[in-house]
Length: 116
Length: 113
Image (cartoon, rainbow over all chains, first blue to last red):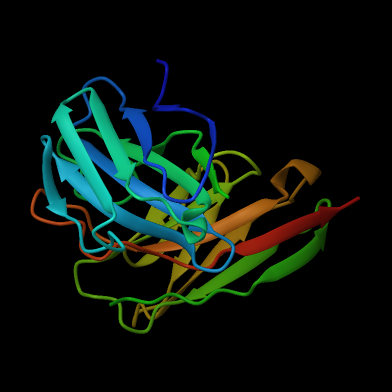
């Protein structure tokens, strides 16, 4: 089992540029989560998909952020335009069907984003 | 919103038992309490989960009092490899929502030789 795959692992960009982060959940999982981690705010849930449909996006900071899940094996988190305060580690996690608790989230290795 | 509060850091020595407490005063009736471990440059990893009373697995125990307003993660006989950040998470996932999943600020546990 390859686990949750995220790409790129590191991204350095300049303010104003568009950034796209990618995630491949574990095969068979039907829930997907995007988190952001910073020193100041800790680990924050940005958005939650279930069966490819966004269910809870209350954590998405603002209109510059958007997330899509076109199919069960792929999701993107896009920031346009990027700002220095978006610098953080972005994690993707997935859960199998029937998960009604919080223990079954499997996290990817994260993407470290630096916006200059 | 079930906000959680944890100590920022703790130090321990190898072989000792470590107890980390998380406060979650506004926990909802259906919320579960989950603890994750995170090493540098890695994503969080599940340790243990509970709803009430006591839960034990091969790596830890979780104690939850009757009012469920706090929980304590107990790590028996820690080793240097247990040095990590430990997060308390309160919430519930269902097909309808992520029920305000809230990670605590995390506790940096440092195990000394």
